[in-house]
Length: 210
Ligand code: AMP
Image (cartoon, rainbow, N blue to C red; front, top):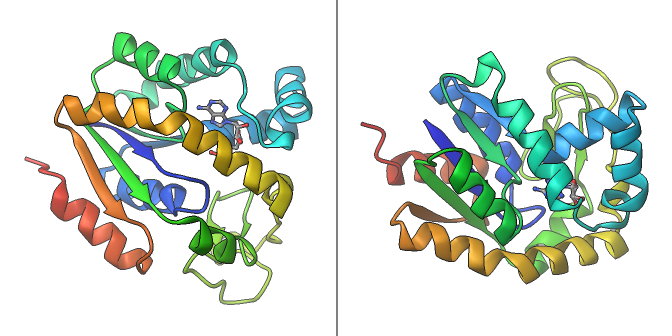
């Protein structure tokens, strides 16, 4: 099973991608997490991507992102399938993905700007487990991850100014991508402005898994 999760920043797509990947026992692959991990490891590509692109709310160029994605999904742990979270983000990426493999479903989790800005005030995440808190999930001990107990951090690119740029970039690119999946009849649209459990259930209900 190969799925694509689309949605603006703050729609909860990462949280849902993680939950659904655990249910389906397939990999959750977030290109954003891949870039952040590379930067944390002081990898030159990761540092360049941060300083030039994601730190400013802009997209990393297609050639770099497609190469990174291709390498990741060719690993043995992806044999059973995967959920791509945050890829494709441009028409060129969507077309490249069509050539690499056949996607079963694209889940588009939508949310409106007012709700997104409200959610971002509280959003923090665990960089070890990649669990996001503040978008409908509250840590048991404030400021610490429920799973690994490490300190939760605010993402560098979650400031209001950078977030506005990220939203603009998202809306500038999303329509042609959505069109591809709609035309193929594999687009599932979900209202992300609902509690986490409800969104998850709706995704499961709308996805014919047999
Ligand atoms: P995310 O965690 O999905 O919000 O991604 C964080 C940042 O990583 C984005 O703002 C982009 O700069 C970069 N990024 C993640 N995925 C992609 C992609 N598919 N194409 C280009 N840049 C990406």
